[in-house]
Amino acid sequence: MSEAQLLDTQRAFDSVAPDYDGPRGNNELIQRMRLTLWSSVRDEIPAGSRLLDLGCGTGIDAVQFASHGYQVVAGDWSPRMVERTHARAAAAGVEAQVAAVHVGVHQLDRLEGGFDGIYSNFGPLNCAPDLGDVATQCARLLRPGGKLVFSVIGRICPWEVGYYLFKGRIKRAGIRATRGVTAVGMNHHTIWTQYYLPREFYRAFVRHFTLNGYRALSLFMPPPYLVEFYRRHQRACERLGRLDDRFGALPWLRDMGDHFLIVMQRR
Ligand SMILES: C[S@@+](CC[C@H](N)C(=O)[O-])C[C@H]1O[C@@H](n2cnc3c(N)ncnc32)[C@H](O)[C@@H]1O
Image 1 (cartoon, rainbow, N blue to C red):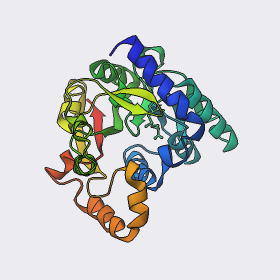
Image 2 (cartoon, rainbow, N blue to C red; image 1 turned 90 degrees about the vertical axis):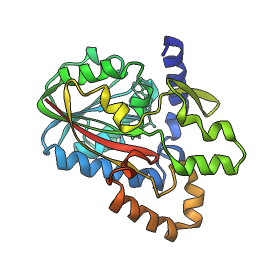
Image 3 (cartoon, rainbow, N blue to C red; image 1 turned 180 degrees about the horizontal axis):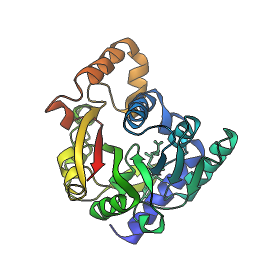
Image 4 (spheres, protein in one colour; image 1 turned 180 degrees about the vertical axis):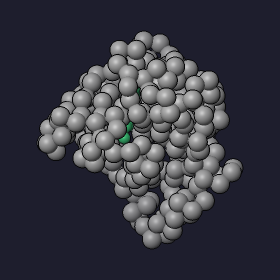
Protein backbone atom coordinates (compact mmCIF):
# COMPACT_ATOMS: atom_id res chain seq x y z
CA MET A 1 0.00 0.00 0.00
CA SER A 2 1.48 3.32 -1.07
CA GLU A 3 1.71 6.59 0.84
CA ALA A 4 -0.90 8.02 -1.56
CA GLN A 5 -3.31 5.18 -0.73
CA LEU A 6 -2.82 5.72 3.01
CA LEU A 7 -3.66 9.39 2.49
CA ASP A 8 -6.79 8.49 0.47
CA THR A 9 -7.97 6.37 3.39
CA GLN A 10 -7.17 9.16 5.85
CA ARG A 11 -9.17 11.68 3.79
CA ALA A 12 -12.09 9.26 3.52
CA PHE A 13 -12.36 8.85 7.30
CA ASP A 14 -11.70 12.55 7.99
CA SER A 15 -14.66 13.32 5.71
CA VAL A 16 -17.09 11.18 7.73
CA ALA A 17 -15.76 11.90 11.23
CA PRO A 18 -18.34 14.63 12.07
CA ASP A 19 -21.33 12.28 11.66
CA TYR A 20 -19.69 8.90 12.21
CA ASP A 21 -21.75 8.26 15.35
CA GLY A 22 -24.83 8.22 13.11
CA PRO A 23 -26.16 5.47 10.79
CA ARG A 24 -22.91 5.12 8.83
CA GLY A 25 -20.63 4.39 11.76
CA ASN A 26 -22.80 3.32 14.67
CA ASN A 27 -26.23 1.98 13.66
CA GLU A 28 -28.10 -0.81 15.48
CA LEU A 29 -26.28 -3.57 13.59
CA ILE A 30 -22.89 -2.06 14.38
CA GLN A 31 -23.85 -1.63 18.02
CA ARG A 32 -24.80 -5.30 18.22
CA MET A 33 -21.35 -6.37 16.98
CA ARG A 34 -19.73 -3.78 19.24
CA LEU A 35 -21.24 -5.48 22.30
CA THR A 36 -19.52 -8.73 21.36
CA LEU A 37 -16.11 -7.03 21.29
CA TRP A 38 -16.82 -5.25 24.58
CA SER A 39 -17.69 -8.47 26.39
CA SER A 40 -14.74 -10.26 24.82
CA VAL A 41 -12.27 -7.57 25.96
CA ARG A 42 -13.77 -7.57 29.46
CA ASP A 43 -13.61 -11.39 29.63
CA GLU A 44 -9.99 -11.49 28.46
CA ILE A 45 -8.45 -8.47 30.18
CA PRO A 46 -9.24 -7.41 33.78
CA ALA A 47 -10.47 -3.89 34.59
CA GLY A 48 -7.66 -1.58 35.65
CA SER A 49 -5.46 -2.83 32.79
CA ARG A 50 -3.77 -0.65 30.15
CA LEU A 51 -5.36 -0.99 26.72
CA LEU A 52 -4.35 0.20 23.28
CA ASP A 53 -7.13 0.87 20.73
CA LEU A 54 -5.98 0.61 17.10
CA GLY A 55 -8.15 2.76 14.84
CA CYS A 56 -10.34 4.20 17.60
CA GLY A 57 -12.69 6.20 15.35
CA THR A 58 -14.82 8.57 17.41
CA GLY A 59 -13.76 6.87 20.64
CA ILE A 60 -16.94 4.96 21.54
CA ASP A 61 -15.01 1.88 22.66
CA ALA A 62 -12.19 3.80 24.35
CA VAL A 63 -14.61 5.86 26.46
CA GLN A 64 -16.66 2.76 27.28
CA PHE A 65 -13.58 0.93 28.58
CA ALA A 66 -12.31 4.03 30.43
CA SER A 67 -15.72 4.26 32.15
CA HIS A 68 -15.22 0.67 33.30
CA GLY A 69 -11.84 1.32 34.93
CA TYR A 70 -9.36 0.75 32.08
CA GLN A 71 -6.61 3.13 30.98
CA VAL A 72 -6.75 3.51 27.20
CA VAL A 73 -4.37 4.87 24.59
CA ALA A 74 -6.61 5.39 21.55
CA GLY A 75 -4.90 5.89 18.20
CA ASP A 76 -6.21 6.63 14.74
CA TRP A 77 -4.77 7.64 11.37
CA SER A 78 -7.54 10.21 10.81
CA PRO A 79 -6.82 13.45 12.73
CA ARG A 80 -10.56 14.33 12.69
CA MET A 81 -11.36 10.98 14.37
CA VAL A 82 -8.69 11.61 17.02
CA GLU A 83 -10.30 15.00 17.76
CA ARG A 84 -13.69 13.30 18.15
CA THR A 85 -12.22 10.77 20.59
CA HIS A 86 -10.60 13.53 22.61
CA ALA A 87 -13.90 15.47 22.77
CA ARG A 88 -15.89 12.36 23.69
CA ALA A 89 -13.52 11.51 26.53
CA ALA A 90 -13.71 15.09 27.85
CA ALA A 91 -17.51 15.11 27.64
CA ALA A 92 -17.65 11.81 29.56
CA GLY A 93 -15.22 13.09 32.21
CA VAL A 94 -12.65 10.38 31.46
CA GLU A 95 -9.96 12.46 29.74
CA ALA A 96 -7.46 11.33 32.40
CA GLN A 97 -8.12 7.70 31.38
CA VAL A 98 -8.10 8.16 27.57
CA ALA A 99 -5.06 9.43 25.67
CA ALA A 100 -6.17 10.09 22.08
CA VAL A 101 -3.19 10.05 19.72
CA HIS A 102 -2.76 10.58 15.98
CA VAL A 103 -0.92 7.34 15.26
CA GLY A 104 -1.69 4.96 12.40
CA VAL A 105 -1.35 1.20 12.69
CA HIS A 106 1.68 1.57 10.42
CA GLN A 107 3.31 3.94 12.96
CA LEU A 108 3.17 1.82 16.12
CA ASP A 109 6.95 2.14 16.55
CA ARG A 110 6.16 5.65 17.91
CA LEU A 111 4.42 4.22 21.01
CA GLU A 112 5.89 3.09 24.34
CA GLY A 113 4.99 -0.44 25.48
CA GLY A 114 3.63 -1.99 28.69
CA PHE A 115 0.06 -2.70 27.50
CA ASP A 116 -2.01 -5.57 28.92
CA GLY A 117 -4.26 -5.74 25.90
CA ILE A 118 -4.69 -4.32 22.41
CA TYR A 119 -8.03 -4.20 20.63
CA SER A 120 -9.20 -2.95 17.27
CA ASN A 121 -12.84 -2.73 16.22
CA PHE A 122 -14.49 -2.74 12.79
CA GLY A 123 -11.64 -3.13 10.40
CA PRO A 124 -8.82 -0.63 10.97
CA LEU A 125 -6.45 -3.57 10.52
CA ASN A 126 -7.93 -4.16 7.06
CA CYS A 127 -6.29 -0.81 6.20
CA ALA A 128 -2.84 -1.77 7.55
CA PRO A 129 -0.18 -1.68 4.83
CA ASP A 130 1.91 -4.42 6.49
CA LEU A 131 0.09 -6.76 8.87
CA GLY A 132 3.33 -8.58 9.76
CA ASP A 133 4.79 -5.32 11.00
CA VAL A 134 1.63 -4.67 13.07
CA ALA A 135 2.10 -8.11 14.65
CA THR A 136 5.74 -7.42 15.50
CA GLN A 137 4.85 -4.05 17.01
CA CYS A 138 1.95 -5.53 19.01
CA ALA A 139 4.36 -8.13 20.42
CA ARG A 140 6.73 -5.34 21.46
CA LEU A 141 3.95 -3.22 22.98
CA LEU A 142 2.30 -6.02 24.98
CA ARG A 143 3.42 -7.56 28.24
CA PRO A 144 4.05 -11.35 28.01
CA GLY A 145 0.68 -13.11 28.17
CA GLY A 146 -1.11 -9.95 26.96
CA LYS A 147 -4.16 -10.30 24.70
CA LEU A 148 -5.20 -9.09 21.28
CA VAL A 149 -8.93 -8.74 20.53
CA PHE A 150 -9.61 -7.65 16.96
CA SER A 151 -12.70 -7.41 14.79
CA VAL A 152 -11.69 -7.69 11.16
CA ILE A 153 -13.64 -7.51 7.89
CA GLY A 154 -13.85 -11.04 6.52
CA ARG A 155 -13.67 -12.47 3.03
CA ILE A 156 -16.84 -14.57 2.96
CA CYS A 157 -20.01 -12.59 3.56
CA PRO A 158 -22.99 -14.45 2.02
CA TRP A 159 -25.36 -11.53 2.63
CA GLU A 160 -23.09 -9.21 0.65
CA VAL A 161 -22.77 -11.57 -2.30
CA GLY A 162 -26.54 -12.12 -2.39
CA TYR A 163 -27.37 -8.43 -2.01
CA TYR A 164 -25.10 -7.16 -4.78
CA LEU A 165 -25.97 -10.01 -7.16
CA PHE A 166 -29.63 -9.15 -6.61
CA LYS A 167 -28.79 -5.53 -7.51
CA GLY A 168 -26.94 -6.71 -10.65
CA ARG A 169 -23.62 -5.33 -9.37
CA ILE A 170 -21.60 -8.45 -10.09
CA LYS A 171 -18.15 -6.93 -9.62
CA ARG A 172 -19.12 -5.41 -6.27
CA ALA A 173 -20.55 -8.78 -5.17
CA GLY A 174 -17.12 -10.37 -5.55
CA ILE A 175 -14.98 -7.58 -4.12
CA ARG A 176 -13.99 -9.50 -0.98
CA ALA A 177 -12.42 -12.22 -3.11
CA THR A 178 -9.78 -9.74 -4.34
CA ARG A 179 -6.21 -10.71 -3.45
CA GLY A 180 -4.23 -7.83 -1.97
CA VAL A 181 -5.38 -4.28 -1.52
CA THR A 182 -8.57 -3.07 -3.18
CA ALA A 183 -10.40 0.26 -3.44
CA VAL A 184 -13.69 0.58 -1.58
CA GLY A 185 -15.74 3.76 -1.99
CA MET A 186 -17.06 5.79 0.93
CA ASN A 187 -18.52 9.31 0.83
CA HIS A 188 -16.98 9.95 -2.64
CA HIS A 189 -13.56 8.94 -1.27
CA THR A 190 -11.54 5.72 -1.40
CA ILE A 191 -10.63 3.40 1.45
CA TRP A 192 -7.82 1.02 0.51
CA THR A 193 -8.80 -2.28 2.08
CA GLN A 194 -7.50 -5.82 2.31
CA TYR A 195 -9.92 -8.62 3.17
CA TYR A 196 -8.90 -11.67 5.21
CA LEU A 197 -10.02 -15.13 6.12
CA PRO A 198 -9.32 -15.66 9.83
CA ARG A 199 -6.51 -18.11 9.04
CA GLU A 200 -4.91 -15.68 6.57
CA PHE A 201 -5.04 -13.00 9.23
CA TYR A 202 -3.61 -15.21 11.97
CA ARG A 203 -0.70 -16.22 9.73
CA ALA A 204 0.76 -12.71 10.16
CA PHE A 205 0.66 -13.09 13.97
CA VAL A 206 1.66 -16.73 14.45
CA ARG A 207 5.30 -16.02 15.27
CA HIS A 208 4.51 -14.01 18.42
CA PHE A 209 0.95 -15.04 19.32
CA THR A 210 -1.10 -18.15 20.04
CA LEU A 211 -4.65 -18.30 18.70
CA ASN A 212 -7.23 -18.44 21.50
CA GLY A 213 -10.22 -18.50 19.17
CA TYR A 214 -12.32 -16.67 16.64
CA ARG A 215 -15.97 -16.33 15.69
CA ALA A 216 -18.18 -14.86 12.99
CA LEU A 217 -19.86 -11.49 13.51
CA SER A 218 -23.04 -10.87 11.49
CA LEU A 219 -23.08 -14.06 9.48
CA PHE A 220 -26.84 -14.68 9.78
CA MET A 221 -27.64 -11.07 10.71
CA PRO A 222 -27.39 -8.66 7.73
CA PRO A 223 -24.29 -6.45 7.50
CA PRO A 224 -24.55 -2.87 8.85
CA TYR A 225 -25.20 -1.19 5.48
CA LEU A 226 -28.47 -3.19 5.26
CA VAL A 227 -29.81 -1.49 8.37
CA GLU A 228 -32.98 -0.35 6.52
CA PHE A 229 -33.75 -3.99 5.71
CA TYR A 230 -33.13 -4.82 9.39
CA ARG A 231 -35.54 -2.07 10.50
CA ARG A 232 -38.25 -3.38 8.17
CA HIS A 233 -37.83 -6.99 9.34
CA GLN A 234 -36.61 -6.45 12.87
CA ARG A 235 -38.17 -9.48 14.56
CA ALA A 236 -36.94 -11.92 11.92
CA CYS A 237 -33.48 -10.34 11.96
CA GLU A 238 -33.28 -10.55 15.75
CA ARG A 239 -33.85 -14.28 15.36
CA LEU A 240 -30.96 -14.37 12.90
CA GLY A 241 -28.86 -12.48 15.43
CA ARG A 242 -29.54 -15.20 17.96
CA LEU A 243 -28.25 -17.75 15.43
CA ASP A 244 -25.03 -15.69 15.26
CA ASP A 245 -24.72 -15.75 19.05
CA ARG A 246 -25.36 -19.50 19.20
CA PHE A 247 -23.52 -20.86 16.19
CA GLY A 248 -21.02 -18.16 15.16
CA ALA A 249 -18.07 -19.90 16.80
CA LEU A 250 -18.67 -23.29 15.14
CA PRO A 251 -16.11 -24.63 12.62
CA TRP A 252 -16.88 -23.52 9.04
CA LEU A 253 -19.42 -20.94 10.17
CA ARG A 254 -16.76 -18.98 12.07
CA ASP A 255 -14.84 -18.48 8.81
CA MET A 256 -17.70 -16.42 7.38
CA GLY A 257 -19.64 -13.29 8.30
CA ASP A 258 -19.39 -9.57 7.72
CA HIS A 259 -16.58 -9.42 10.28
CA PHE A 260 -14.81 -11.98 12.46
CA LEU A 261 -13.67 -11.49 16.04
CA ILE A 262 -10.27 -13.01 16.77
CA VAL A 263 -8.50 -13.38 20.14
CA MET A 264 -4.77 -14.06 20.39
CA GLN A 265 -2.28 -14.19 23.25
CA ARG A 266 1.34 -13.06 23.37
CA ARG A 267 3.61 -16.12 23.63
C1 LIG B 1 -14.78 1.50 10.41
S1 LIG B 1 -13.90 2.67 11.37
C2 LIG B 1 -13.95 1.96 12.98
C3 LIG B 1 -13.70 2.94 14.07
C4 LIG B 1 -13.81 2.45 15.50
N1 LIG B 1 -12.88 1.39 15.79
C5 LIG B 1 -15.21 2.02 15.83
O1 LIG B 1 -15.36 0.94 16.38
O2 LIG B 1 -16.15 2.78 15.60
C6 LIG B 1 -12.21 2.40 10.88
C7 LIG B 1 -11.24 3.34 11.55
O3 LIG B 1 -9.94 2.94 11.18
C8 LIG B 1 -9.17 4.11 10.98
N2 LIG B 1 -8.02 3.79 10.12
C9 LIG B 1 -7.97 3.58 8.80
N3 LIG B 1 -6.72 3.33 8.39
C10 LIG B 1 -5.95 3.37 9.51
C11 LIG B 1 -4.56 3.21 9.76
N4 LIG B 1 -3.70 2.94 8.78
N5 LIG B 1 -4.15 3.33 11.03
C12 LIG B 1 -5.00 3.59 12.03
N6 LIG B 1 -6.32 3.79 11.86
C13 LIG B 1 -6.79 3.66 10.61
C14 LIG B 1 -10.14 5.09 10.36
O4 LIG B 1 -9.70 6.43 10.46
C15 LIG B 1 -11.40 4.80 11.16
O5 LIG B 1 -11.48 5.60 12.30
